Length: 160
Image 1 (tube, rainbow, N blue to C red):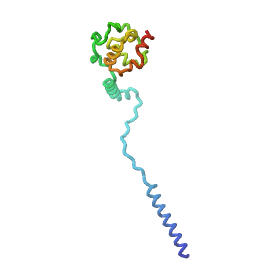
Image 2: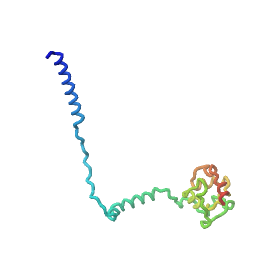
Image 3: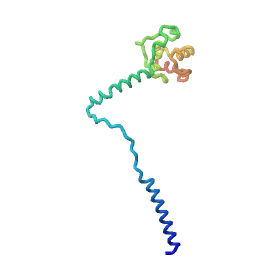
Image 4: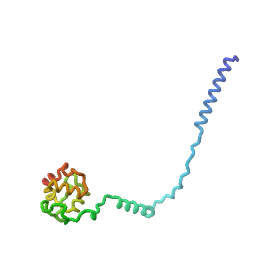
């Protein structure tokens, strides 16, 4: 064997050995497993399942009630206070109530706020002046100029 062949064989051997080491180093590692909690035994009885999760359901409902957008009628002015000019817009009672959500821009939440300050009918809204709109916007803590932009007065006139 001449030295050229021996040198070639040695180079091939070194390259194969390096390839072996690389393959062994990256390919032969076992995955480390993270110990997990033992799973509770499977429960197939719906009563048992409900009994187990009922306290959590109650907590979720109570937290939702606390954080929901519930209207606090105590912070709104009483209906009989003269913030609004009821002489010009008219008075109405809950028994006269129209479905104010038919007006674009009025959802159930806003309707409830309007009712809380004594606004129940399309007829009342159709009589709003610019001053009334400003007052109502302030009383129900609503977006400024939203009533004008959605033309609540015009919509209410068409719906009455």
